[in-house]
Length: 404
Ligand SMILES: Cc1cc2nc3c(=O)[nH]c(=O)nc-3n(C[C@H](O)[C@H](O)[C@H](O)COP(=O)(O)OP(=O)(O)OC[C@H]3O[C@@H](n4cnc5c(N)ncnc54)[C@H](O)[C@@H]3O)c2cc1C
Image 1 (cartoon, helix red, strand yellow):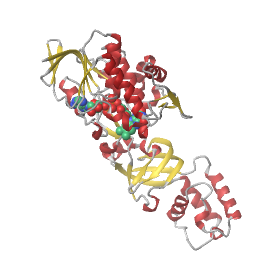
Image 2 (cartoon, protein in one colour; image 1 turned 30 degrees about the horizontal axis):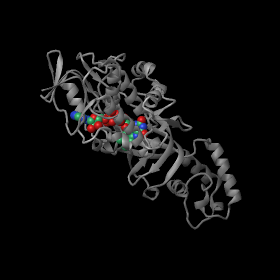
Image 3 (cartoon, rainbow, N blue to C red; image 1 turned 60 degrees about the vertical axis):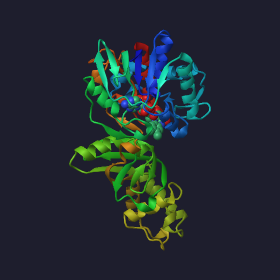
Image 4 (tube, protein in one colour; image 1 turned 180 degrees about the vertical axis):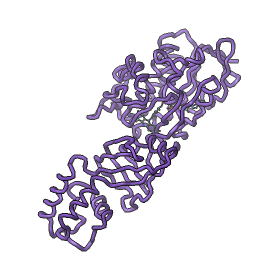
């Protein structure tokens, strides 16, 4: 039987960070990271399209689910502290205009490399190719898979989004073995499926739209990029609606819709006036050209088709004032029925997890099982795109490590 002071189950963003934090503070402790994949940190390599958007300078607790809990963690480990943590391992970062922070090399591999070398340098044991499937409490400590004993244990197994990166949801059953509950889980940051999504728009992007998700009452509004797919919508604005869309479709009897405002920077009246001006300037141009100054041509055509006013062989002058008003109204409110999401297999994040009411926000220790700690996505905390979820993984990992 191998014996450790601390065992970290799950070797990715939260687990590696926690192991480093605990070992830096207590070099005399024996720490082990147990990871089911052949190497630690696989998911980090996939983040930020291979660039790893590791935090966001603007991240505040209200960007997250369970903000009161997150606020107590961020009091100690704000985005600045996470950046400092990486600087302490020699990694420099830069941020873009939206506060998204990336490694100076623009490569996720750099983030993983500094973490891996720190783990090695500190003498933290790493056991890979080992899925933890059983944790039992014994003599005030824990036994892992019947083979490893430890005094304290951290569950940093992630959620069940993107299982090909190792996070297959097995951490939840480990937590329930130790007396915890798990909230309902929904895939988040994943494309939505929609009935009647126009096939002609597949692959077409709109840069800055406003989306409103509703099922009789407004559930959420987002702004940003929209991408039409073969059977639905993707892009940041759509993906940030996913968890609520999935919940609505699976639990509410009435239909769920998203309303697309393709031009949120203009009121409907301003849009009508703009289109009337276009009509004046381009009266002999084909209808395809009506939105060409503001939107991808294919979207303009689709909007005209949706109100049955598109005639390929007719010029813009063919449209009456009433027609223009009708087209403008559709551009401001294009409706799609949402039928679900592309599921956990394609999701970036899990919404739901170990209830924060079962975790001490000052330490990340379980309130139900002494010596058990949590960090990262396994907890019922998640947020939108832009570095927020890694910020949570690193911040909660640092806090758990400090207290382990
Ligand atoms: C494609 C993609 C891109 C993303 N891009 C970004 C981004 O740019 N910025 C951002 O903030 N967030 C991003 N995210 C989300 C972010 O990666 C996660 O929120 C974050 O990695 C969660 O960290 P974690 O350590 O809690 O869990 P995970 O990173 O999921 O790590 C859990 C680890 O535990 C291991 N494990 C699981 N079960 C067991 C078990 N039973 N025994 C042993 N080991 C186990 C897994 O193999 C895995 O290595 C992205 C996610 C994906 C999928």
